[in-house]
Length: 336
Image 1 (cartoon, rainbow, N blue to C red):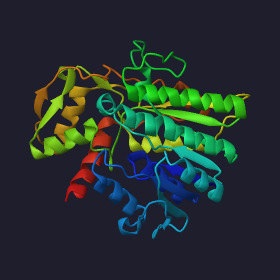
Image 2 (image 1 turned 90 degrees about the vertical axis):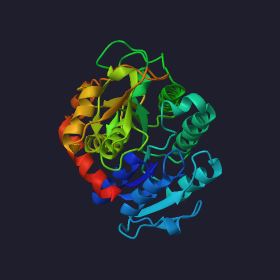
Image 3 (image 1 turned 180 degrees about the horizontal axis):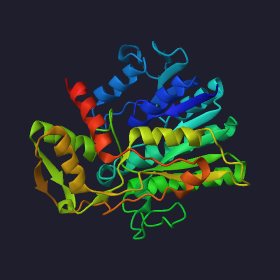
Image 4 (image 1 turned 120 degrees about the vertical axis):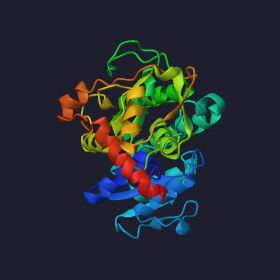
């Protein structure tokens, strides 16, 4: 049994990771600031699924799960340096998985300082606490958006990634550089995970899969950017967690213990095909509102997962139709 901190525990990926770790027998502490970037009701519902009652949550106080004896939750913001330091000193974590961040490419256009505070300052606080408290392995969420204007596909971890097209992507690049410096200077094992368009049950309502599903079911128009001429490497949540679990358990032992992995389906899907798959599943036709290209967007994402396959013998494999079917089933139940 390991003692593991998961930041962003009320988030999409964080929720699934917490449950996976608990089900395999680890002791888990989750933290989240439960900000209002999207509807907090969804975040509280995720927490409830893990036995954390909304009524018991107060700032900086431990809440014991009613379902899992080895799970506790704290409402803390990563920018609260003293509280983060205190948490690490008291808990003595073996592994830390940092999934907390201000998400969203387009939101970063109008709210830059939110990203600096959370994704840079908050990340530095977690990284420094890992160093000070001798954490065995620090794993953190990066993003496929880091590839920016790269015109070479599929995207490889060996590619140059110095042309971000959004501040969000720039903060994720900064995280990787910060982690590398700590791995080099202090021999702290760090691993960054570049996620590719994650979707599925309990997914983020600001992302296209959720927006499309909701609008198509309700007969509302969907915004189709760049007139539908986009491709995304949609990756089902279970595949993400399977890969993340393997990575958590295997810190690098290199001279500079620093690794980066893509986790994606390695099979880009045309946006119009993705919409059609939702239409097939729901039995309803989408009302499409064609739009131009959005600032900060890229035309295509495509993960090269060679490194993941080489080191762990693992590659995501959930088909789009299977993933959408599961997402639809959950969405109908959740909506009702």
